Image 1: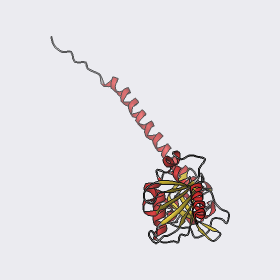
Image 2: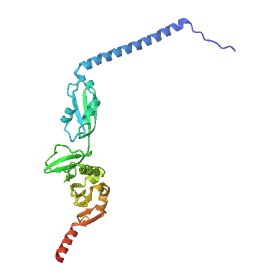
Image 3: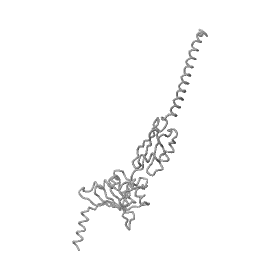
Image 4: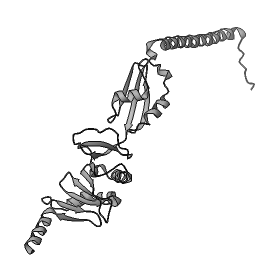
Length: 262
């Protein structure tokens, strides 16, 4: 059986070719019109106030004021949003002692948002009646935060801006936040046998004797140690060598006993 070959006449093909060419021409025209419209809108946008910075917002900041961050960034209202080098602004902001990282974001058409992540406020260095913020990177801010006693981080007394302070901050950094929040004050009280001896006053009424060398290693167990002490008794938890508790009453009784024996 022979295969039948269907023959299409030229007259039948011409209308289809014309229709195909017409659709192709229409698509090309639509593309050109769209491109032209985009170009017109782009020119209008860049010539209008919509391409100029209308507002600058700052998020995540606590230690540095919003206006100061905007000033440092160098971004001003009226600047061309496409002329802002975001990587350069990010680099400038991250040079500030308080800023750990920064992001510069454009919210179309003309709003700039500066996302700031600051170093954690680790403690306060007490100098006379001033309280200077110490960051988690060990830097001490030049300006005192307040003359009012802060309560959102431990107070460090007897320290100077030296290697000892850096070691103390490193040790604090290694502590869980829940343990850090229990510390009210840390006082550097060097001994002949230990120049890094410290005394801590805790928010729950206990006193801790420790050394900076093993501070985080020993202090991480503080909640467990306290849970084993009669809550009606307050005293000193010694973490210098081992770990033991001396109640204040016991010290008083020993003093009375010594006096009675004289």
